[in-house]
Amino acid sequence: MSNNETKTDVILIGAGIMSATLGTLLKELAPDWNIKVFEKLDKAGEESSNEWNNAGTGHAALCELNYTSENADGTVNIAKAINVNEQFQVSKQFWSYLVNKKLISNPEDFIMPLPHLSMVQGEENVQFLKRRYEAMKQNPLFQDMEFSDDPETLKKWIPLIMNNRPASDRIAATKVDAGTDVNFGALTRMLIQNLQNQDVQVDYKHSVKGLKRTKEGLWEVKVHDHDSNKMEYHTAKFVFLGAGGGSLELLQQSGIPEGKHIGGFPISGLFLVCKNQEIVEQHHGKVYGKAKVGAPPMSVPHLDTRYIDNKKSLLFGPFAGFSPKFLKTGSNLDLFASIKPHNITTLLAAGVKEMGLTKYLIGQLLLSKEQRIEELREFIPNAKSEDWDIVIAGQRVQVIKDTQTGGKGTLQFGTEVVSATDGSIAALLGASPGASTAVQVMLEVINKCFPDQAKEWEPKIKKMIPSYGISLASNPDLLKEVNKAADQALGLDKKESVRS
Image (cartoon, rainbow, N blue to C red; front, side, top):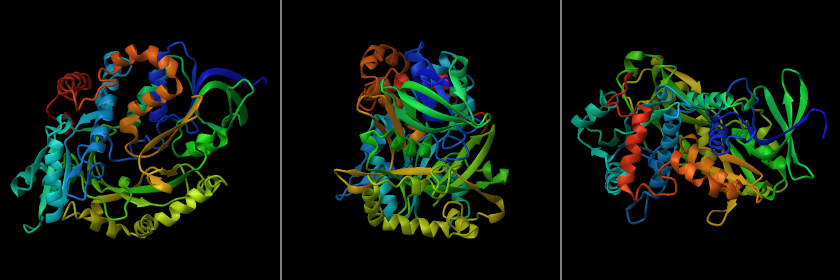
C-alpha cells in the first residue's frame, strides 16, 4: 500500500441524488461505517440531479401516459404505474423520516404540492384517456383521480391551455391534486450537507480515473485532485458508481462480468422556459401529453410548473437531442470510448432496431426555435416566441443490453442497478423515473450488496419506511396512514402551495 493510499468502508462516486440517498440510508443503518464521496464538479447535485437539468420531477405515475400501455383488446395495463407510484411513496416516507429526525429541514425548499394532469387531444386519445382513468380509479393509489372532457371544467383546471383554443378541439384531461413538484437539486444538497454533518468526507473537484480489484478483494480507486493536480489512491470494501452517465465507463473499468454486453445511448434535452411572469402565474400543475411516434419515453411533452430558487417557473419540453457526451460536462469522445469488443454487437443490433428513434432525434435536432414554439402551441394556443427562452437540460444515457424478451441490443427505458455477484460494487445506469424512485432503488442496492446486514437492518428500515416490503395498493388503510404522516411532515397537507 502506497503512502498516499487510504482505506475506508464505502466509496460513493458522484455527489448526485443516488449517492446522497445511499449514503444517507447507510449512515442511518450503520452509523459507524466510514464513507467517502468523490465528485468531479465543485458542488453537489450539479449534473443529472440539478433542478435546471430536468423538468418532470416528482414522477409518481399520476400523469405520465408512458407508464400505462394499451392492450390489443383496448384495456389499459397500469402495472408499471402502480410500481412507480409505490416507489415514490417509499421516497416520501423516507424524506418525512429525515425531516422528523431534523436531519434535513425546510422541506418546502425541495417539495411542494402541485396537481398532476394528463391531457390529450382528438377523439381516439380522449377515449383512451377515459379507459385509462377507469382502470386507474379502481386502484387505491389513484382513487382521487378526476376525469373531464367538459370545456368549462377544463378552463378551471388548465386555463392557460384552454385560453383561445378553438371550440372544435376535442380535449380531455385527468387530474390528481395530491401530486408534487420535487427539486432534486435542493434535496441532493440537503442530503450531502447532512452527510458532512456526520463526518462523511465529501471531496469536490476530485475525478475518478480508474478502479481495480486488490489481492485482498478490496477496490482501489484512483482519484485525481484537480486543485493539487495529484493522484490519490483510496481502497474500500464497497464502491457505488453513482456518476450518472459517467458510471458506464467506470463499470467497464471494474472488469466485472455483469458489466459486459452493456452499452449506453446518450440523449440530450432542451426546454423552453417562460420569462413572462404573468403567463407563469396563469398555470398551476404538471400537464403531460402523449409522446410522438418514435420518441423515447423521456421525451413525452409536458408543461410544468416548477419551484426553482424560491420562484415559480414554467417549463415546456423536452425536445430531444443528440450529443456523444455521457454527461453535460463530459467529453465528445464518451460514446466512442464506451464501445468495447464485448458490447459492439449489442450496440450494432440496437442501431438496426432503433432506426425510428434515430430518425426522430435527427428531426428534433433540426428544429428551429419557431418550430419548437409551434409544438408549444399544441399546449398554449397563443404562445409567443418572445416570452420563451431555450435552456439546455441534462444529458441522459439510456442502457442498451441483451434481454430475453427484447433480444440482442435492446434499448432499456428506466433505471437499472448492475452489481457484482459478491456485492462489492454496484453501478446505477439509465434515466427516468430515476430520482423520484431513488430510495427504493438504493434499498435494492443495499439488499443486493449487503444481504447479511440487510436482514439485521430490517426493523430500522421499517421505522424509516413503514410500508417497507408491503404493497400499498393492496393495503388502503396503511396507504392512508403513511400518506397522512408523510404529508404532515413535508408540509404537503396545506391545501394550496404558499407560493402559488
